[in-house]
Image: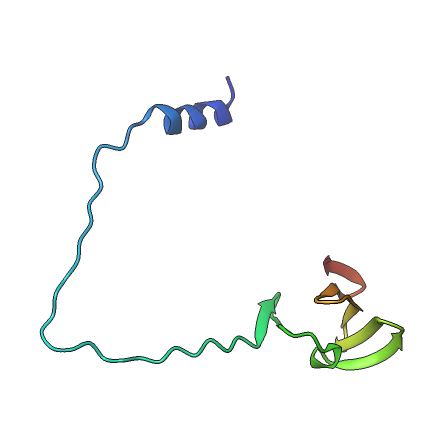
Amino acid sequence: MNIVDLNFDTYVITPIILIILSNGFRKGKAERKLVQNKIKFQKYYNKKLPIGYNPTDYGKVITQFEYKYIVAIDSNSLVLIQKEDNYNLVQFYKNNNIFFF
């Protein structure tokens, strides 16, 4: 028997005995807070990648061939973008290594 089997058995045979839920009440009215749902960037390895459809949002367009773009984010980061009908296929390169596809 290996360690994975030992840990898995614990989850299978241990029943949940008690669940505690708590809440609190305060006097007065709750403040009304407006939530801004404008997400413009996604952080990935300390890089702000735009959530958008326009390839120029990513940085400086180095070259474009039909629906494919090579965009420089900074001196050692590139993005290859292929535009499709309703979305973009994005490849992120840093120091000549692919980070995601």
